[in-house]
Image (cartoon, rainbow, N blue to C red; front, side, top):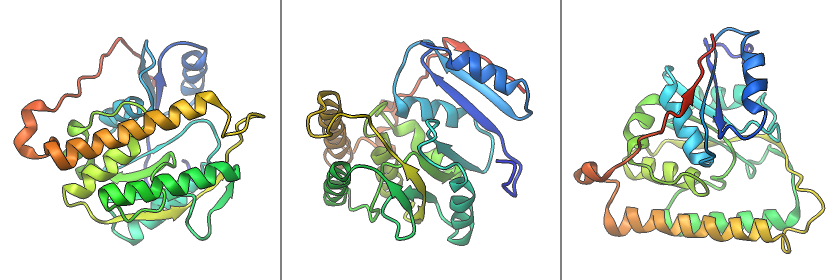
Length: 239
């Protein structure tokens, strides 16, 4: 982040205080300025954690990146350059960008292509890969979109992109990434935990479609029904 040309802040969200993540994050944060550690006691899922962190951000450009280091964090610079170049509303890291460096199992590639076809069919999103945990947003987009979102776990990326597109934020672009995904010795097709995740993702995705296309839930006329009230069970700010 020190290599980026703009002043930055780093917000680490601890999605459930279940291990030593909080302790390690706090030790790191004490050594650096502009680092904030926040979280809550109970694990709530990626979507909730990302929204929780975004709600604490201050910048005109807001990004998130998964913390597992599967993604090369130098990709932040690449996406930021694309964000400026295209005057984008949103830039998403994409495994299917022609110059991306991608290392992950062929089974997942097939499932990923199938899922993205479903996303295009349901929402008309002209994005070849919605699921990479590296995205940039204009603050204006988040201020309009975040209060409307419901998905806390599996289809968060699709929901935020579909709602933004629905509200008229069409300048959504893809950028290259460097990613290495390895999932241990189990085959994707026989991994019960992974198959349950796939099923849950499909259910969440269809629920987003139902709310968007049938219920018209995300429109301004349904503002009273929106609900995002993060539980601040604990918060630690450093820097």
